[in-house]
Length: 197
Image (cartoon, rainbow, N blue to C red; front, side):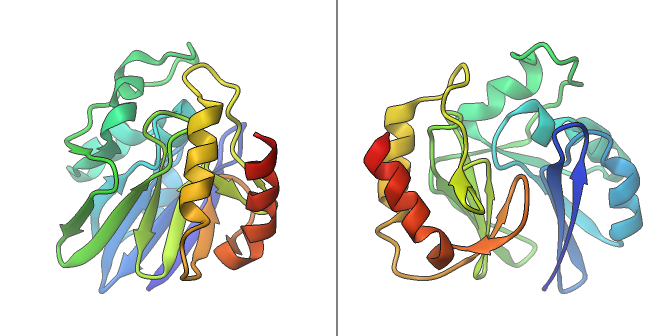
């Protein structure tokens, strides 16, 4: 399994290309990410969205059209792909597969679990592939995602933190912004946030 990452756009949003058995999964194609993606992939098979914020889905449609791929998006965030609720001029896109909360799917033999962690957005999810967790804007190195945006919910963020704190296994965490970390490394930070929200 090979993981490539490139921060995109003004918000330095991490776009990931995950390659397994010569099959490429594209996670969160942000602003102007197609050019970089084209240099990384040989056999792209899907676009996966952790959530619907514009800086994570900006190039959804452009990448979809380039490679004729399906877009997999958490159901509760699908409305953001079409309506550009923040008025940033985001190109609209259309999800092909709406992911239910905590749904596990399989794409060409690759098992993928969308863990539902609402709070930052209604559908915010962490995408698990093997022992790797692509957390979008839920968990970062040393902090968590904001929950003061329109359509964010502090009480749901607290519940999401409580949910992940019950996990026994460790994971390599690849966040939507900044450097990678591990779940074990972030336990103290998560407990601090859980106590203060």
